[in-house]
Length: 102
Image (cartoon, rainbow, N blue to C red):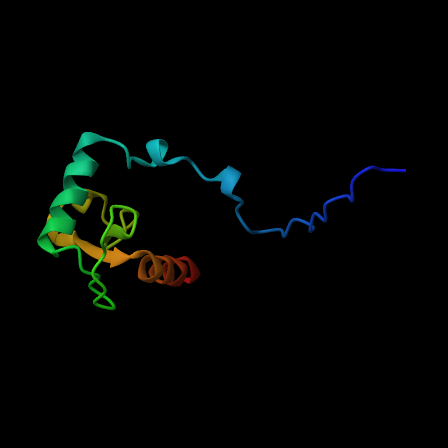
């Protein structure tokens, strides 16, 4: 008789990428000095205020610097401050989900 109740593991859905399949932040280019400088410039320019809902973000983890035009479309504008916008966590997640559906 098992001493623990076995965990339910739902079947893997085909066609969906799992988190393990995604490259980490360093491999995607989000840990370099140039990216950190771009992020700080974007957040400072926008006054740490979400450009979608208007929420003022109080901490580093509450504000995301987002590319208006994705890097996959315009790689040459990756560190262009005009291509960046400050978004709160919720708005950034919503925008990312919307872009993934396209």
